[in-house]
Length: 107
Image (cartoon, rainbow, N blue to C red; front, side):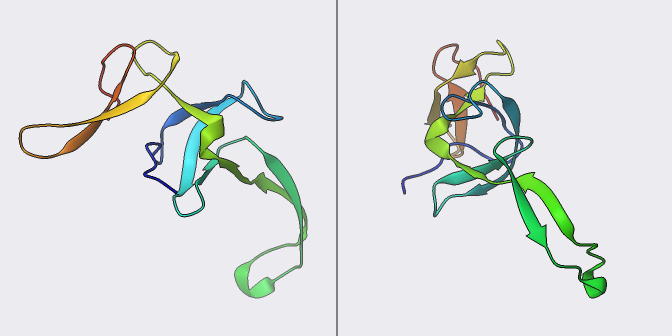
């Protein structure tokens, strides 16, 4: 996988798949698999066994599954629209992300 521009705590919108149109916050990014876990998106049911040592009650648990990065777009905080991201380096060498449409900084 190439470099992933989506980071943890970004607001994203799903652009393809069964959850198209839903928005949420990125909880976790899995760059080696090219996937991300988004809050409230791609919900799955897992049958879990009780584990008293970890205070797990057991039963059917609903949680988020990972979704492919290509199916997500970041929401620009300034315009509240989905945008493509670019990366620029400042004079001191630090990289920061920006919205290609509006030019506003995302970080």
